[in-house]
Length: 332
View 1 (cartoon, rainbow, N blue to C red):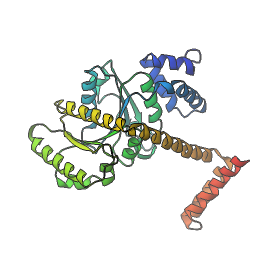
View 2 (view 1 turned 45 degrees about the vertical axis):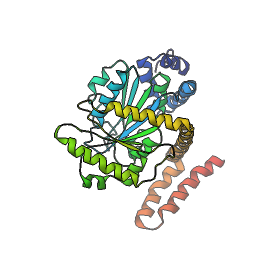
View 3 (view 1 turned 90 degrees about the horizontal axis):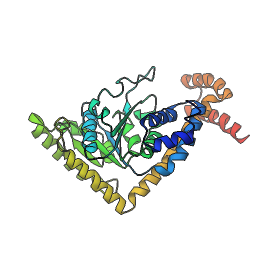
View 4 (view 1 turned 90 degrees about the vertical axis):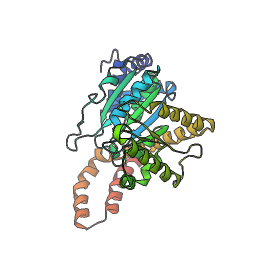
């Protein structure tokens, strides 16, 4: 970083003006693992916090093959055509060995990437649980401060990523492709319970009848589940991202959801709970970082791992011994 022009206060001012280069630099700063960068990132976020919270936060997930990137681009261009500024935080699958992104950056959303009212930021999932980049929440705050009206978080769609993204957005969209009852059985109940809106994509051409059947099956399934909010009952919509069809109805559902959640004060309560959950996530991450940095713990780890593998001690006992090392030093 250029310390003369990119100190937190100066960078914050540039981000407020909507400077894309400054926004990208700010996100790079919050994603960095360097201690000095993290300190600067927290100062930057403190500067910008009063300017956040005004955007509509949408999470998008779904199984492979559902067309998440195609839908994100279609929906994003639909929104920018209506004068809205859209930020897309796309979580890419990562190499298990190097942590690098497999799919690259903006190659899957070329039209949206060229849109002056859109900002796309791909981040490798790395080793974060469920494939959601650890600093996605901070990136979301930065794009809000930069004046973006809608934030779309597109996840890998595997493992625990749905739970992670649902805990940082206002509305969770589950994208599915046309299929029969077997596909319905394959979708985990937990994911269904997280969804505020289910979108059956690829409803075009010969797939229209199958898409309609799939939508009806999911509507029936939703009736058997308890809604996660008393203010909103999940709905099912048909869409064709390829043909740019059904997007208006989806946007209307987003507006209806926001109105319902805001009217009862539920939106503020949800965001407050998410902020608290975020704090405890940071506490867990901080404790793990402290454990890794502790010299005595580093010395003990190989022996404790060997004891656990051989059955000489239990994983719980080994974990407690490591934690006692870190917490004991903290008390000192």
